Image 1 (cartoon, helix red, strand yellow):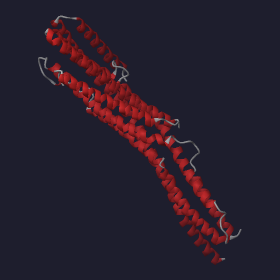
Image 2: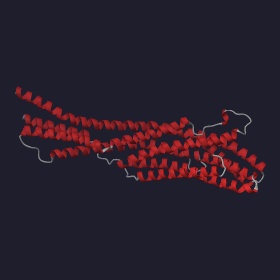
Image 3: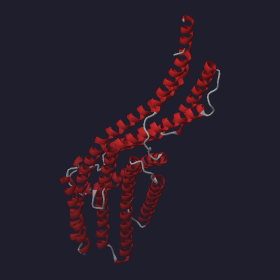
Amino acid sequence: MSILQAMSRLRLGVVACVLGVVLGGCTTGPARDAIPPFRQGVITANQQSQATFAEVNAMLREQQLDRAAGLSTLNEEAFVTVLPSEDLAVWNRAFTSIADYAGKIESLLAPERRTEIQEELHKLGADLQGRFANATGSELPPGVAGGFVQLGGLLAQMKAQSDALAIIRQADPSVQGIFESMGEAIGESPEDGIRGTVWTNWTQDLGEIQLEFLHASANQKRQVAARYANMLAEREAYDRTLASLRTSILSLGAVHHQLAQGESTSAAGLLDFIESEYTALHEEIKALAEARKNAGGTE
Amino acid sequence: MNPEIKKLHKSLIKTHQELSKRLGRTADPDEAEAILREMSEVNFRAMMAGQLLFKQTTIAVNEKIGAVLKASAAVDQSIRDLETIRDVVKGIGKFLTLVDKALDAAKLLI
């Protein structure tokens, strides 16, 4: 074997080795376009849950103050923080971890990963072309170097997609578990979970108005009845906010599951809708609370 | 989740609803006041049960965060793999230069 033949074989061996390393599999990857809205959805759900739960705690504290005012003694046992800060911190950590993980998946699937490798392959191709010309006195057939660059880039992309899909699939049961537990904590109906506690609290406040009605003069009764009707609407709107938050969290789970199946997902539209619904409900609650205050009710 | 706490929470909510219905039917202010006081006590206990329920679901959430962190680490590794591939490709040109030099030296010895 001549030295030239040995060199050619060595180079081919090196090239084959590079392709072997790059080649990670031929699986279809997760829908890359769905990752940014999913990540944004997680961040939004975190903000919504922290804000809503702070309001829930404040509202429940008010009711506890009303109860404490009627007790013969005052002690710590008269108060309970329904959604303790240490538990809210765990929720925050869960959301942040999932958002961080989604951000990394987004980075793994970024087109720049492919471009960077293609740029290096392009340089290598030019180098090999020069060496081939020096060694043989002839040019590589046209298109070989370009094809080599394209193939390398494609293989890099396939490896990224294959890795991303495998990781998402492995994480899926835990991500589902987190979102399902959160959904369970919020409650499926106004008789469950946080929704149940909050609904009952509103019913207690309504009871105060009902008692006021019994003491009211004929002239005052209409005004009291109006406040009662307004508070019924507030209770309803508050419950819908919690239900919306629950739907939002469970939708994130559904989107992640679709990503794990390698299915295309309409994550962006769905999560936009949820965010706008939540904002609209909050506006409604603010307006109702304002109306109650103007009608002579408490904050 | 402990089903007993969930059941207790539900049962307190149901009791509160029944008391609320009774309150809505009475026209006697004294009776209404007594019912409202009872409702307040039930409501407070519903809050306590609600807190325990929330703590339990939070424990379930916490147990699964580790798997998400592990997935994040796996993505980091995959990104590093691609960077290694890029660096390997980058190093091949240099490697071939070395091979050329070695072959040139070998030619001189033949």
